[in-house]
Image 1 (tube, helix red, strand yellow):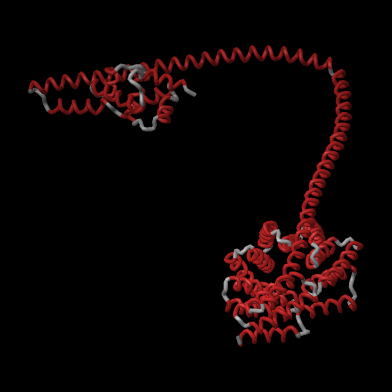
Image 2 (cartoon, helix red, strand yellow):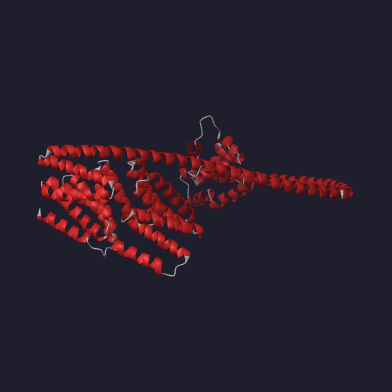
Amino acid sequence: MKRALLFLLVSFLFLGNVLSQSLQEINELMNELEFGKNTPIEEVDILNKLGYAYWVVDSQKSLEFGEKALSLASEEKYDSGIAMAKRVLGVAFWTQGQPRKALENLNESRLLFEQLGDKEGAANALMNSGMVYADIEEYPKAMDIYNEAIESFSLLDLSGRIATTFTKIGTVLIEQKRLEEAKEYLANALKMHSENNFEYGQAEAHNRLGRLHLDLDEMELASYHLARATEISSKIDDDDGLLSSNIQMGRLYRLRGQFTEADRVLSKSYQQANNRQLRRYKLIALRELKLLRKDEGRLEEALELYSQFILLKDSIFNATKSKQIAALEFDNELDQKQKEIALLRENDKVKDLTNLLLSLGLIAISVIGFLMFRHQKLKNDKNKELMAQQQELMISQEELGKTELENAHLKEKELKQALDFKNRELTSYTLNFVQKNQLLTQLEQQIDEIQEEGNASKKLAELKRTIRSNTNMDKDWQDFRRFFEEVHSTFISRLNDKHPEVSSSDLKIAALVRLNLNIKESASILGISPESAKTARYRLRKKIGLQPEQELLDYFLQLEREK
C-alpha cells in the first residue's frame, strides 16, 4: 500500500511540472514561427510540427495548425507539406471522433507520400489509418494495416516506428483477449522505445502492460507498469495517457481492496474525463466506480452508477456504429474511386494508343506511298538492264552448271578409284597376312612333328621360338589397322563411342568380322585356334548386347551407316 501511495504522489508531482518536454517543444516552435525569418516553405514545416506536437495535448489546436499548414502549402504548391498536413489533420480528426474525415485525410496523405517517393511518410500515414480502424473496433482491418506498416518500417530500418506499431497491435490483442500474444508485442515495444529513449512510446507501452497484467491478475507487475506510465506521461504532458493510467491504477486499488485510494483516484479521473468530454475514459471510470461501490456493499449507489454506465455505453455503442458505418462508406467510396481512376487511366491509355496508332498509320501510308512511287520509277528505269543481266546470268549459270557437273563427275570418279585401290590394297594385305600366318603355323606343326620323332636339335627349338614371335607382331597389326581405317575410317571410333567397354582384342575381332572373314581365317590372322576365335566372337556379341538372331556383320554394317 505504501508503495502504491508513493507512486501516486510521484505522479501528481510530475503532473504539476510545467517545464515538460511537449510544452518546451511547442514553445520553441511558436517562438520560431512568430519571430523567425522564415520562408513560406519553412513556415509550412513549422506549422506541421506544431500540429504534430499538439496531438497528445490539444486535438483542436492540432487541427487548426494542420489546416493552416495545408492552406499555405497548397498556395506554394509544396507537395511534401501538403502530405504532412493531411496526416496531421487525419490524426486530429481521429482524436475528435471523426473517423471518416480521419481516413479521407490519411489516405490522401499516404497516396501523396507514395507519389513523392517518401516511403517513411506513406508508412506512417498507413499506420495511423490502422489506429482509426482499431478505435472503431474494426480489428481485422486494423491488424492487416499494422502488419503492412511493419513490413514498410522494417525495410526502412525504422525501429522506433516498428515499436509504436507493436504497441498498437498489442492493444488490439488485449481487446481480443489474446493476452499472451499481446504481452510479447508490448514487451518488444517497450524494449525498443527504451533503446530509442522515446518517452511517449515508453509511457504508452507501460500503460498497456499494466492493463494486461491486471487482466492476468498479476498485481505487482501491473503496479510497476502503471506507476512508470503515470510518471512518464506526467513528465511529457500526455494528459490522455495520464488519465488512462490513473483509471487503471484505481482499478488496481479496487482489486487490492484499497477502497479509499480507489475511490479518490477513480472519482477524480471520472471528473477529468467528464470535463474534457472523453466519453470512453468516462465509461471505463464509471464501470470501475460501479464495481467499487458493489465491493463496498453500497448497492444502491452501484445500481445508480450502473444505470449511468448503461446509458453512456449505449450512446457510445451507437456512436461507434455510426463511425463504423461512416468508415464503411468511406471504404466503399474509396474502392469506387479507385475503380473509376483505374477505368479513366485505362481509357486514357486506349485513347493515347489510338492516337499513336493513327499517327503511325498516317506516317506509314505516306512512307509506303513514297517508296512505291520510287520503286516503280526505279523498276521502269532498270527494266531493260535487268532483263539483259538476267539473260547473261542464265547463260553464265548454265555454263557454270556444266562445269560444276563435270568436276563433280571427275571427283566422284577419282574417289571411287581411290576407294577401289584401298579396298584392293586392304584385301591384298589381309590375304598376305592370312597366308603368312598359315605358313608360319604349318612350319610350327612340322617342327612339332620333328621334335616328336626325337631328332630335334637345339636349332629347331630356336627356329620354333622365332616363328612364334613373328606370328603376332604388333607392327603387322599396326599396318593392318592403318589400311583398315583408310577404307573404314569411322568404324572403330563409332564402335568405341557406342560400346566403350570393348577391349583392343575385341576391336581386332570386330575389324576381321567387318572384312567378312570366317572363323578359320580370323584364327589364322590372330594366331589362335578356331575354337578360341569362336569364343572371342561370342564374348564380343555379349558385350555389345546382340540378340541370338542378329549377325555381327549386319550390326557392324548398320553401325557404319548411322549418322
